[in-house]
Length: 227
Image (cartoon, rainbow, N blue to C red; front, side, top):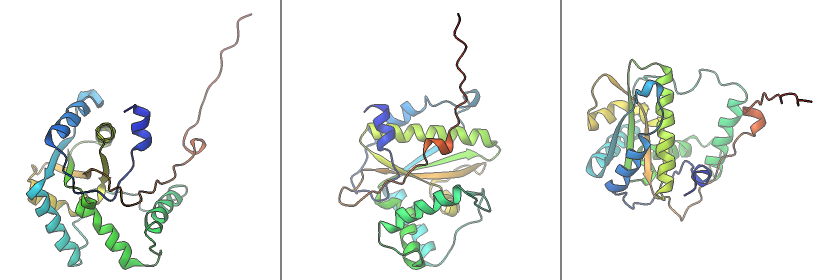
């Protein structure tokens, strides 16, 4: 798959089939993704690939907490600014409208929205999940390294005919994740990623991106033409 096609067709899929992803494919993807750049080649990411019984147990544990009204663990990092301002507020609102509107869920239907959000912790039906951790003492630039790496993984998954969805929502139940995969205490959960085959029987609406003029400034000055 051409890299432009991989970027164009990558999207956060929120309904997967139960078709399994082989370990061979995952190893091929993650081996190639190791070529992603990082500051001073530190490669600060720590990955855990979970499927089968361990993933089923993790889904069960979090589902029980959600059903009991447990809102999750103390947050270890801020996912969003405390007060969203324009244009970020409008972009987030557009995501919500696209996501819930495509399902016919009204803005004031809190219960239905909660049920849809709870699908995060079922990996949207995917049978494979990846969890990305960083050492707690890693500064902000090294977190950006992890983002570059995860994007590389997602594009390579597209090249394999797979889809994915990164989910910071897993950090809300980081203790349950740790109970199943047992990371060293010096590591902090950044996000999860659901991996699998997109369910072709449901719509997967794409969310509009901001036009280039909103996010990019070109500072270009042509050199004078020699006479």
